[in-house]
Length: 121
Image (tube, rainbow, N blue to C red; front, side, top):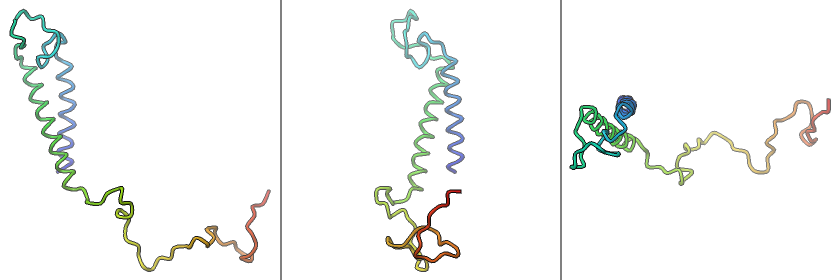
């Protein structure tokens, strides 16, 4: 469901960009801009392109709200700040090394008390 709303949202965004770019730059789009249309009302004539822009903008806002609601319903109650709350519970059979143990792999054929020094060749 969320993927379907996301695809519709992206298509609406692209259509809204296209419709806005098609509008005239001298005050025809959404009633904003420098209007020298001769009318003293301050409101530009509603063109078909302006109505489509409003329709796409309202649909874009609705899909934004729908995506917010869908993602909030799927979110968990754990917080990133809690830290350990997001980690899976530790199983009982796994041994974790203590701070005193060496984290190096054991070497083959050498006693464990000799230090591991890399060769120069």
